[in-house]
Image 1 (cartoon, rainbow, N blue to C red):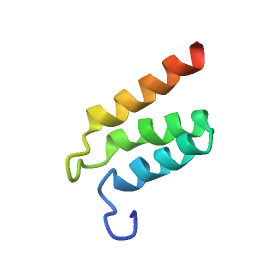
Image 2: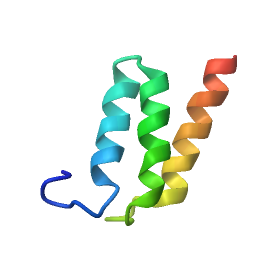
Image 3: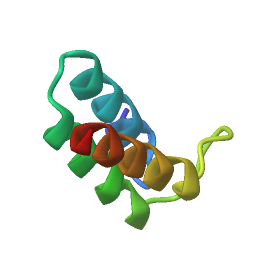
Image 4: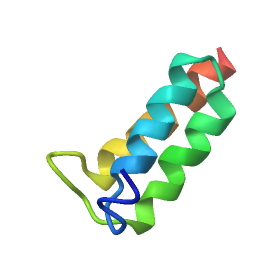
Length: 62
């Protein structure tokens, strides 16, 4: 995704989803947080990415 959409947060979204699905929460949180500097795309907002990171942090604390 970074190759085709270098300025969008799409690659961080998919990377975060991958890490989340494979149980690597810390890496998923980092991927979601790092997406904030990129442009939004196809209904995936920066706010969505930060919400994902916050959700994972909260789940880790429980």
